[in-house]
Length: 434
Image (cartoon, rainbow, N blue to C red):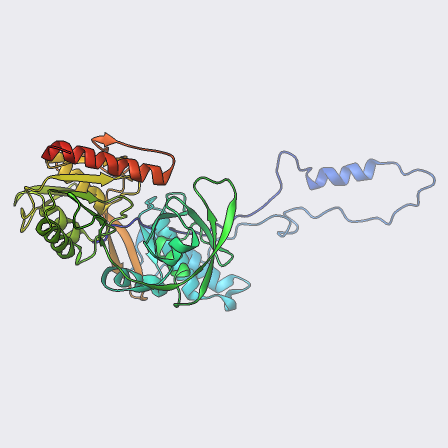
């Protein structure tokens, strides 16, 4: 299961337009008004004209409802709830004036999007075939693109969670909190997350034009980014070997994140580190299995990390496994408003078990469990199958996790610095001394 932030849809609406019955003058009344007007002596008498056609005389005056043919049958196997959907499809293909130009794939995808949109879930979405393989690229290798972690907001706008360190996105000036509205002059508002990502990605060395709304600016600006090959590193050591406390940042949760984190912590301990500042700020999420492995390092074996509740109310507990290697190391966790999904699992579990104090700001609040199902057309259905809760029963969806020590600032750089300084202060209180 994957925990990013999730994805959106389009439906068709056919509207019959007609005049406002409260303001329109009936055809018969119009004819009577014309007939009673006296022409002036200087006016030539017009040729008699027929009164305007009424609806009964000409069905084109207003749309006329025509019943379906008597022999119109819904095929066996079509669910009763979808009978009208099939009926609309059949009527369009049989009677619409442009039916010979219709593209069935377009119909197919529009219908799928309409169904998904009906769920009202911003984290569910249809993934077209051309975007389906993005998930595998992100989890197990490198990709060619701009190098930014993104989320789709509930209003359908693409949010830059964080540019990857050293990426083309960072070099071009993209920042956390930016909104991407257009790609190469085409609006991406309302697309699913993967559809939007697919438009931004492209071959190494090619350019992509992004219309961006910066968090702190009123006007929009176009930014040109040159795509490159983006490595998928998730464990970033921010401290120096001689530092008293190790500072390790997790940018996401890949399949190998737990293993790489364990190696980094062992190396820091070998260098004499007295404690660990685990930084999940700007971390948008990742694999459920990975975040369980990471959290297990700091808890006793068998500890509850999270539990899920599905649509039937069935509960599924996720326990710590192969746990406890670093259960005694002094620990402080850094989190912020862009710590989402899987990173919130770490924060919530460690906080609930009293294992460490959390410094920063309230997390993003994405507490849904999502899976990507492959469809027969080569695309996929990305959908929410459950919501997850912290060990103490806190629902994260829409709420986030509040820190033990809140440190915020409208200035992103100042906030990052102040939060880290507070984490060091808390760590010094834990281990003693300065």
